[in-house]
Length: 312
Image (tube, rainbow, N blue to C red; front, side, top):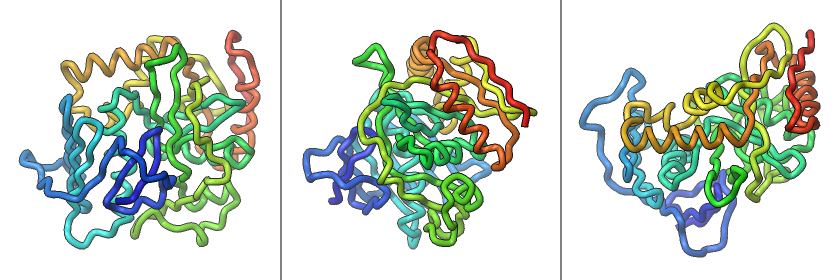
């Protein structure tokens, strides 16, 4: 068994997970093992995948990867298809599957990236392709340590302030985004897996490995100019629900006790941490101005209401 740490959990894995931080061989919070899970009985959707969650189990299937079963937030059983490469298994394993583990452990899991800013965490939310990782990478290159990329786990219990748990030191970027945000030569960066254009950047030198209070959240959107606009709490709840992994992956299972508990989590976070629209034109050329706008906004006291607009 390999031993790692991610999101505050010690993970023992039958599969090597080079993206994670190696941990001492102590007691495991989560165990990953190979085993039989099987194909879905109810069939797959148009993407060839199938997702289902109950209060104790989560089942995830991709026809080109295999099946995953998550039990009680403590165990992951991986049933890969024959001949699939390990890097392709790790993509969902360290994404949606790990999100199911964290959700089962009572955390609110957001489709977001986060960096550290003056001892706090700042999260960027938005759909795939909206630039969460690119903006986080640009801030990381300016000296703000990476906290998590693509999957942000928020602990709402045990403290008045919501806490973001450190993920693992990897940024996933398209080649042009890696060049614009980090100055990386994409040809020197490894692909996430065969057939994928996104590259992996190891962020070990500037990675925040301790839990941090969540200070602010930004929801990426499009607009004619760079602009930050505060959202009302009712709007915040809606957007948090929409940008959570539970809604994005297990939408069909989001009902009853699961839906009620999830709503209360999102409402709790909305009442404690502000969420702002961060609007910009979808162009890598705006990154310097966008980054400067975020840094200037974070330098403002939380008690103020902001609305900045910068013409490009």
